[in-house]
Amino acid sequence: MKLLLTGGCGYLGSALVDFLLKNTTYEIIILDNLYKGRTENIAQFLIDHPKRVTFYKKDIREYDFIENLMKETTFDIVIHTAAIVDAFNTNAPDKEILCDEVIHQASVKLCELAKKHGVKRFLHTSTVSLYSSGDNLTEDAPKEPISNYGKSKYKAETKIMKMNNDTFQITSLRPATIFGFSTGFRYETVLNLFMMNAFCKVKLPVFDQALIKNKTYLDINDICRAFKFCIDHPEKTAGECFNIVSFSDNLTNYLELLKKHFPDVEIEIIKTHNISQKPYTISGEKFYKAGFKPKHDLEGQIKKVKQYLTQQYEINNKLLK
Image 1 (tube, helix red, strand yellow):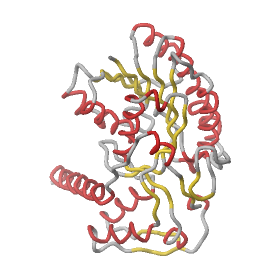
Image 2 (image 1 turned 60 degrees about the vertical axis):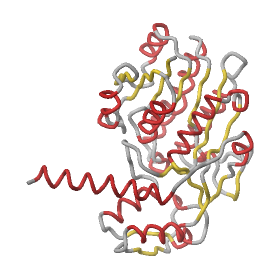
Image 3 (image 1 turned 120 degrees about the vertical axis):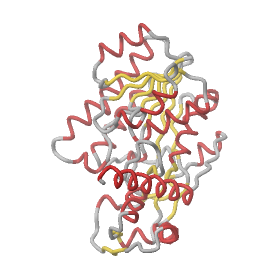
């Protein structure tokens, strides 16, 4: 059985490759244009599993290539993670068109091609950035995205979900803010950024409201498990959109845990309001009722990231000597 994974060299994508190799028998074909991802993020998988992992340096807007690939290869599943990421930076004037082309138009076209060529399951990565404010927001909460990223994701999801039928089953996952280690580790999101800054002994800038107001987070292992849950349970997930959540908490508790592993960490409290710090919380109850149970491990992820950063530091020191 074969699975097409877009964005497989990125932060989430590389974690998915690792997880799927360990927990399924799928042959994985990866598409990534390396805009954010890196081939070194999947290098070990390509070396260790040459018969199960194939990589093409391709943009998802290269429709002729994708159509020919689908003509030549029978894919059972498409997992679509490719996107222009870092939501609030997408509000820059030059990003609106790019977001619409990649996140909206190309996602819809990919879904159309998958349906045309007999793919059975299409798993779309949406976002909780469809929402803008509120507490314990469910999937039917008002959609008021405030970033070009969120707006494009919403347009794509709306059109993609209309293509669902009995023979072409679609599920759209709306991940909360992802944290934790993958071979494609990135630190745009707040928990990862704070881990990196704490390791580098850089003072952590924390908005005062974030110390007391909850925000919703998602362990990267949980989102990988969520994709597999959807693969394994189409009868429970096809035709549905799900918020994917590990937990909601404020930064006070997280910073205490961070201090346990980085005792010298310094924190700077900032009182200036910033739109990217606007707090809201997401309900994962719908997905839980379908049978999914999160197994997040915040402290375990801090340990993994610290170990990774320590190893990188030691390697760089040896190379510079």
